[in-house]
Length: 563
Image (tube, rainbow, N blue to C red; front, top):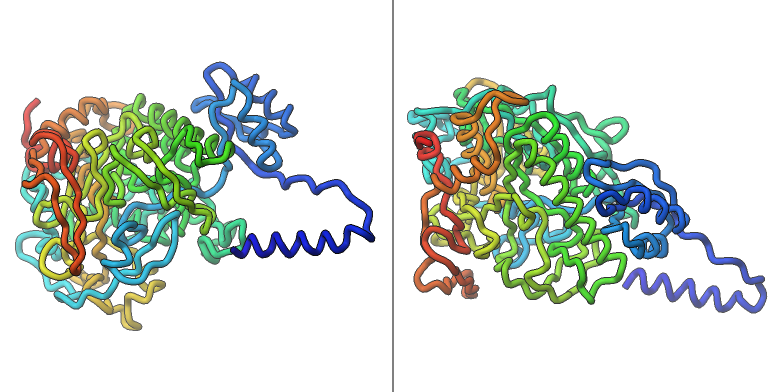
């Protein structure tokens, strides 16, 4: 409405002045940067199309087949997109969000978890305080000080797997996310600072002047490669590979090396180009497994030919589909196993009907449009990607988790605060959190003590470290990534980066070691929440179905299986 009112005001003013002012030529559209993806062997033709449309090619990447072009407005995009050499055009800007319920849980977010603000193209949940259980660690004789809180590790047998293997320091795991706090005491020993990279620059405000990332923390607005001002990426990294060091928790693969390959803004949005750069970098340096707990956006579902979208919007979605697939293929051909969170929309991705969250950037641009199975979530539904649904402590599919017979490859613990009587934060996944993020969010008091049981402090070795409970498919995916890292550690051969195992073989072993879980009975499972109900239907057999895919990942079996 604000844009409409402003437009009417300008129109009225212009009309009133028309009688006494000379007519001037319309102002040229402001120049912007675009990614122009071209068909195979058509780089020159695409460059000519850019020039004919009044733009200029200023860069590009022949590995992924795109130009970086400067041009003016929608007319430029439409003209370039008309050329048969061009397969997609996207504005080079922030597009995407992280897939944890603490960052963006759609559907039940407002009803189940308290007040909602908006970030990253969807709803950002502001968690309630959960007054259950102590927030100060008291230690546990069976392992790390907080091991008793890690129901997730016991579910997949990771605690027992560590007696067999912790994973190898020759295995590189890339975290493509909002960053990783490489100084956290329970991450630092396994953090590879030399290989870590940040592919984004913070943006204090978006193009509408609204706050995006907020004030820059460093000169030039480009954070160092060991910083995470969101906390999402740090949580993911910790679940994968927090070391066994007498502090806090242990990850699934506590002996592997963690590489921060940052592609997400502080606000949780992701640049398309940053995602492309992250994947190509992972392939170039010999990363063995990458975790992608986000979707590239502004489109929750990317449709190449949706009549509800403008020509420019269709071209953008084609660019996302094409560009990301090329980057994923590039990485996979170089030995990178690709793991993705499935999504938190409580939606059967094989039968989507409506998309109410797109385009999610800039904020306020969302519209309701019909979608079908030809529209895909990227990267979860891209080829060559292992997509992971989420389960709660009881083993049921989490209420928020997306699902689908074609889309769900594996399941893993991602937490579900509603999986049981009442609501409990401890049904989420506990992993490392940057102290600075917790302080900024007001979750610690002046002395550093957590204000609720959502956050846990461990001071076992004098200096304190912090952890938080989160839930989401973002938290499920790193469990699968960690198991994949254990498999590469056991069966990989010397290669670039340390050890290498073909992604197809890693995938085969992941599926083969997973614990099969059948659909619930009845298959139309009814979730009951605060007097309301939601029905989600599971299809498929015990060995492969829409809720659990090939099964729940099994670290112990991965640590002991023979080829």
